Length: 80
Image 1 (cartoon, rainbow, N blue to C red):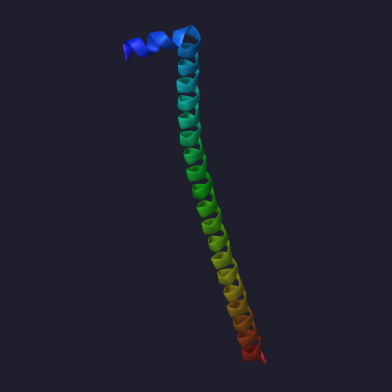
Image 2: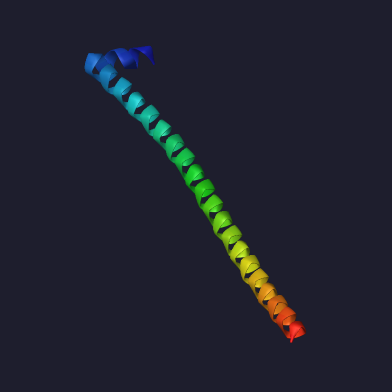
């Protein structure tokens, strides 16, 4: 192996080093992309959970309003 590396000469060794650097850079980019995707997934899940909570809150407010209207009508009917 040493003889083959020596046969490559300086230019070959530089090319091999550059290929290794490019490979490592691509590996880091893949890891970074994976982390970004994970964070995007967490953000989407969190957003969906907030939307669902807001929907439940709106339903609760609506049903409370309906109950208050019914109670008010009942009280008014009792006074007459």
